[in-house]
Length: 175
Image (tube, rainbow, N blue to C red; front, side, top):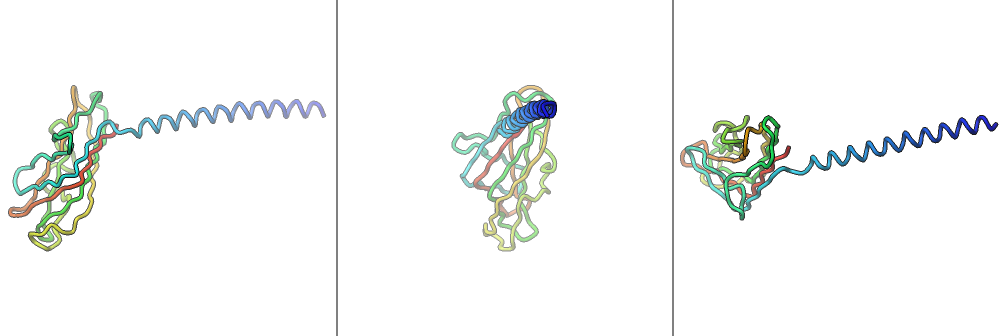
């Protein structure tokens, strides 16, 4: 009987050590994911902005702070970043008319937002009226370059005589 108890004591101690190691590993894993959840940089703006047909125009993504760019601190060359832009969006054109955004990293539009044919939001048929508002969001991935990395957003209406309206914007850069 005493041999059985010694064997069980050994098993119990081994189990406690294994469970303790598992708990430490889980705590370290949770700490790592919580640290990763912090955005590198972000900007918000609640002031409506209007964009017309023609060349893409800079979007003020910093609101009260002002400015059309966000600088990513300490991003090593080649590291990937995910950039998310969201906004309440409306377009005062016909059903098949739209406005588009371009998310840029170091001055280069990132796919799929490169060019003016990426519909961020479209008209709903009531020409000349900004109705049908909806919150839209776009995520892109880019690689940091050498030196300071800069994020910007541009917008445009894709059709003459129409405007794109953006409001309640948020731009977030994640590692």
